[in-house]
Amino acid sequence: MESQLGMIEQSFNLRYSGWVREALNELSDNFTITDPSISGHPIVFASNGFFKTVGYTEDEVIGRNGRMFQGPETDRRSVMKIREAIREERAIQISLLNYKKDGTPFWILFNMCPVFNKEDGRVIHFVGVQVPISRRPRRSGCTVVRDAVNSSENGALFCQGMFRCCRRELCSDTVMELGRASALNSVSIPDDEVEMNVPCEASELEKRKANVAVSNVLSVLTHYSELTGKLVCGKRSCLAGMGLLGSSLNIPLGSIKQSFVLSDPHLPDMPIVYASDSFVELTGYARHEALGRNCRFLSGKDTDPATQFQIKECIQTEQPCTVRILNYRKDKTPFWNLLHISPARNALGKVTSDFV
Image (cartoon, rainbow, N blue to C red):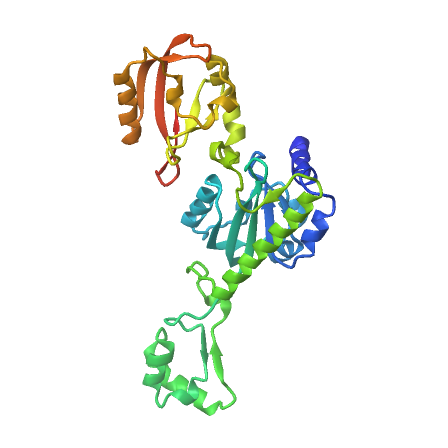
């Protein structure tokens, strides 16, 4: 636990200068910053405004995953979309139902974006901005009704045109009561009667506010990274990113002792994006010599073309296969390789990489 807390502390201290926390806390926005390279993808920073909104203290939040704010009515499909954005290291903006410490549900517009190492394109952090969504009355509901008395002449019209969800047999008497109450200009249904699990869409103003908040946080992080010389940016700005595996997978894959590589079928010529230590030892190629290249660079003059064609067909049809193929080490030494290829799929069943 102590080593985990140390990594969380270093997540900020090694990348930004000492005043970055104070500068971030001067922002009025609600946001968190997480580190995908640490096991569990924990929160390493949260703004003062965020603590006030959710009701948790700093000690209760730092070091924990953001799913602690989810609850029974949080849409699992929305959570899945966020997870996919993290795996694919891209930004996402989505409405989400979260829960405060006291169990109160509230809707937010969640705007998340990655923070990249400017030098090599690795993802350093994710910034997650939360903008509370103001619940507005739906046209088919009866949350708020304003100036209703003067707009209707009889109870039936009033009931049909304004309340719709009200019981029709009560409307006539209700209108007569409201008509005698000239001081009453609006009728409101208590907020706790509104269904919180009904999807709540953010307004354009709230979306703009979320975008501005992300920009403000990125500006602060960029400025204070310049003071340490370890520059960050909001967009991957180098070609080195082409050969990188998602940072959230680096630690788990590093513990696997077998010889294997991961290649990306979505990039031109399906390059290797990760090579294990055992693969490096087996082939004699350094990791940087393998990354960015297609696996066929291990083939040689006596490699069977029919076997290569079989591998190609399996990749095109996204099917696993196992073959015996003659490969060559860096020093040109041939060796027989029992090769197993299997597609790696995300939670939606989409192929993200091929495990070789």
